[in-house]
Image 1 (cartoon, rainbow, N blue to C red):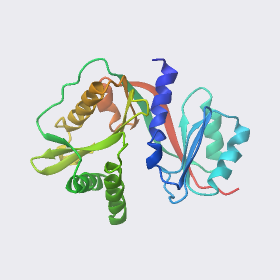
Image 2: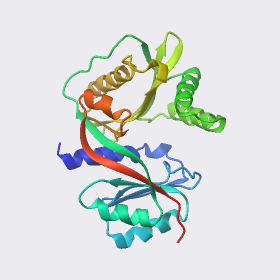
Image 3: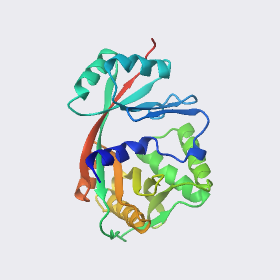
Length: 259
């Protein structure tokens, strides 16, 4: 698979969802040189975003108009041509929020997961609550965010044509880690879209075991590639040690603008 194809697969994590499951409030602009996502019912910069922009600086105003003053994030893929866009965004008041590394691994052999802890697929309502609870402890969700996450995950698991799911890591009966995954529409790519372990359980191989389990399942399904956008200096070093290679860097800029 060529480098540009792999980068497109990495970018697709942001938009390649099951069409029937996407709420009516979410709108897409999806062209080869411009991909934007807008959720009319959300002000989250993770729900409202520019995923790809390969157009001229003269068309930046069109993007601002599309979001109509709502907060949104602009994911800039670093390249020799991205400096001018970054300067323009900073001039417009955008701030650099995070840097993500686009990583991918060609799946050429079976993975061997660790068995030191218990790992299972999220299936029941109790599993969903445990999955959200461990995420809430790690990321500091408030009550409203937790309830919304529980509803979202429970609804997704009931969706007949879903292409993804959630896994839990447990120390006996205690949830200590979680992960999220999804397969591409054509079934050839595994999207790794979130995983974390409680601070007191880090360094015990749990993250790597969850990763290995997901990669092994992807191989069984006939996937050729696993991709992710890893936050710099968090999961990124672990993924590199697990055979993932860097193909792109994405800088997340955040702004709120009115024309």
